[in-house]
Amino acid sequence: MSTFTQIYYHIVFSTKDRMPALSADKRENLFRYAWGILKNKDCHLYRIGGVEDHVHILTGLHPTVALADLVKDIKVSTSAWIKDNAVFSKFTHWQDGYGAFTVSHDDKDAVIEYIKGQPDHHKKLSFRDELRAGRIRGSIR
Image (tube, rainbow, N blue to C red; front, side, top):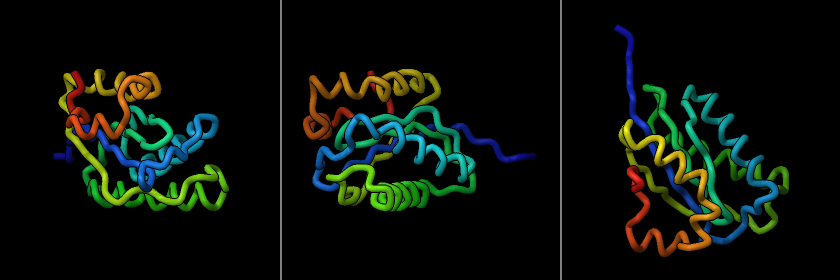
């Protein structure tokens, strides 16, 4: 029998000290680059998005890929890409650590919409306030 998994991960990580360094005009290029990393690891990207100071990724992991290794690869590779290509002038590096939450199949679409709506969402509630309130999780309701 082949290996089958259906585990959705909502991954969140921020810029160092939550510096608002990821300008909107170049953010899509960052997201495409991260998508390439996920594809190279045989992971399925459902949605990527974010704002000036953090990134959200909803993905399924290939069974041979460890979550911590994947996040490390994304952060190291995107950091090098940003610096090598002078993409974001204020970017120094990513904050240590990350958040990762499993998402039920029933909640997957809601999390996709949550990630899509990040710019509007954070006009009302800052990332820092959202973290303090414990509102970032796998199931967004």
